[in-house]
Image (tube, rainbow, N blue to C red; front, side, top):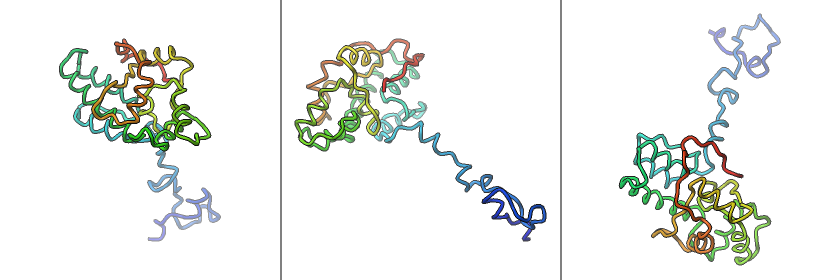
Length: 224
């Protein structure tokens, strides 16, 4: 039965000193399921966001017929759900779903960044995704550093371990927010102190009433 065993020398190096006289089978390790070369998990991991959004997963689980993509922006996925359901803006089902989604958005922010506006670690988390380095030493410096940036809060939730765009002007931020439909709820029962502080300071820059027109067919990339 030995001639049915694999030649370890050939499997490891792709060659065998015995050549055709070897009594073992010449099978490359790359052909076996256990080979590192045969399992390319990197491509799959690249598509997904760095954090699994449990609040969003819970929300979209209520719509099992919808193929939720955690690698996409949460708000884009909600708009995609509306399209798949055929919900118009004033549809009662859409209104109810949107309220639940906004709760999930706020809870997700709280889970990532915390709720205490006086906790410097929470501000440091935001500084990190905004590429503010070195991290400020004091709470005031951390706050001022964050509030000096023109940022979209939905992006903070969508990219907790990545990079969040900071826009050159308020007008550029307004245009981006309206174009992408990335509005953060101004008031929510689940909002903690940190979120309320941010909203109080910068929510006035997120004005606009329309969702992006023709969103389903748009391919505009998020600025990074």
